[in-house]
Length: 305
Image (tube, rainbow, N blue to C red; front, side, top):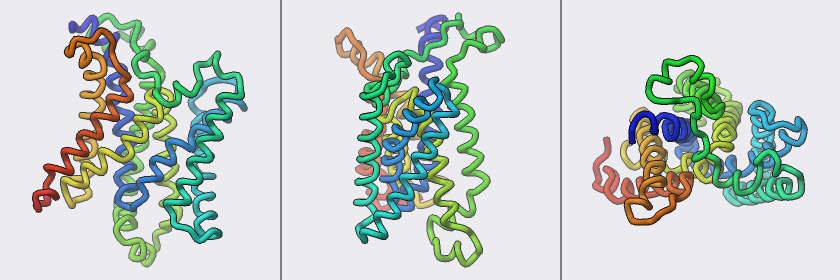
């Protein structure tokens, strides 16, 4: 494929997929290590009613109202999970399952019972995303990367995800030490004066922001997969947190890039005429990477880096 075809048709969807994958994988590392991986799954479900409510309140599909709605939904879910766990005296995983299933169902009901078809906000869109359609129509080739008029026509999803990815990276960098200490020894972190409860809520909120930023473009399937698969695969490669984060970024990037290419060209290489869902293929590739890490990673061979 020449630059005249790749840049307008594939460059922006590819970048959006990669940025969404990394933005979800970074906080996912700490959720996995804290044995809260299900929260990543829950976030991708509970943000749906927040997104719908944000649209219903404002009447427009805009990033910030939906992010505020999603963040509020994530905070409510955390409070509900803790309340059910304490009042019902049941296991945390069971409380998470109850809350994220109920909130996701509420979001689906809101989508079905309100008039959202005119703004392309529907159940299929929420699940599968809109990655294939996020093309850069104003681009004519690689030279468009230096053309101000062409750059003004970039899909807004790319700009939004770039900003969110920078914020996630900054959060991880600024709070690296307290996140690291509280993740491995919460009691010791509290003796050092760290407010581990607030830090945990902040981590969930950052994950929720990453999820809603990616939600419209890539759908909940990729969001769920990226919160868990790259960090879990990276955990099987090393015992060092720094190396684990690096591995997870590499795995997330590989999943998004390779999955997008396979979705578009894999069926053609096999003789089929139609492509498959990019979201589904990216999630599938991330699962395959996790399987290979489990089978052939250093932990499997008794070696850790």
